[in-house]
Amino acid sequence: MIAWCCQNQLESEAEAEAEAERAPLQPTMATIPIRISVTPTFTSSFTTKLPSKRNHHFSCFTSRNPTQCPVPREQQPVNEYQSLSTSFPFSWAAGDVVEYTSRLAVTGLSFAVFVGLPVALFGSVGSQSELLKRVLCAACSGVGAVTLAVVRMYLGWAYVGNRLLSATVEYEETGWYDGQVWVKTAEVLARDRLLGSFSVKPVLRRLKVTLVGLATCLLASALILINIDGYQNELNLRSNEAGVRVIPGVYNDESARSFEPDAFCGEPNLQ
Image 1 (cartoon, helix red, strand yellow):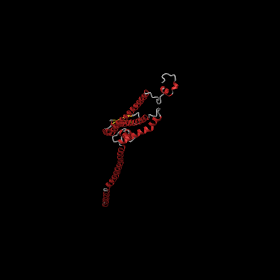
Image 2 (cartoon, helix red, strand yellow):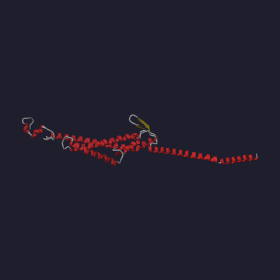
Image 3 (cartoon, one colour):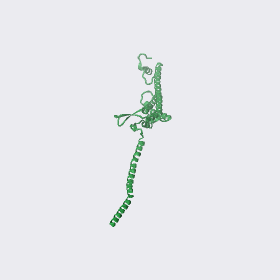
């Protein structure tokens, strides 16, 4: 009986010691899975969200459209201004005054020499003594060519200036059949109007002055041509009144009688 009691006591003590040994191991076994499971989830979530943020900011900076403008890039007034200021011949008007004037002068002179003058010399019928008149016609053709070029530049700059100064932008999404209108934001409107007022308006003012000067040159050339014709007609009338026998390029009975009086024998009014 005593031995059985001692055996039970020893078994109970052994079980207590085993439980005491297992008790400190449980929290370590419980914490290890938690650490392993929490740490990867944190790192995985961090690594998946971080590239998305970077891509978002990169797309905003690369698109250069932080105001969510629906207008296509090539139809935005700012981009239209940049492309116009670097294209031919619209870039002439935005450059230096000396360079602008010299290019227009070279254009007009080249057209007058290589196109207007050959046409005036070989494409018209008349006396070869009218050299001044033909040179003046060639000069008028050069001025006319320059006038057409300046008018084309003025129309292009006026179109871009109106789109910059306007509070709305008309654009086409895919074609002419789906036109839309976008109202500019306050920031975009201020930027466009600043650009239109200080960059486009001076160019338009310069082109207007150029057109006025070219129109004055054309008017003066026309008046000179009219005066030349009137002066030649007046000289012909005076020569007829003075009894000049020969009129270049004109047949006259009086002149024929003066050179061949025998052919007009018996004719009245024979001197």
